[in-house]
Amino acid sequence: MTREEILERSQNENKGRDIVENEFIKKNFVVCWIVSLVAASVVAVIEAIVLEKQNSGLFFALMSGLFSFFLLKYIRLRKRHELFITVMYGIAAVCFLISWIISLVKG
Image (cartoon, helix red, strand yellow):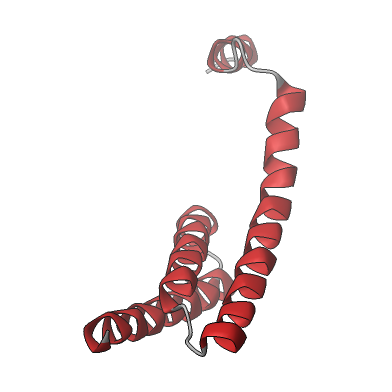
């Protein structure tokens, strides 16, 4: 491929996209995840204090989201530390899933 062909292909792929908006979304996605995690943690702590029970389903959902994010990141980058983080979030998600199912069964 020549340089001109690569440039033309890139322009066709990015047609109708705002680069500033794409960068804004990429950078603020992490901030949104952090705010969601903090809010969920506050809800879980208050629920544990007031209702004297842990909401494992909430943490299962959060850990599953983080697991999928890091799995896709590992698939893309193939970095060993990303695989380690992916496995840790996967284990956490499975543990919270089991805890949630047990709490549902116990009623």
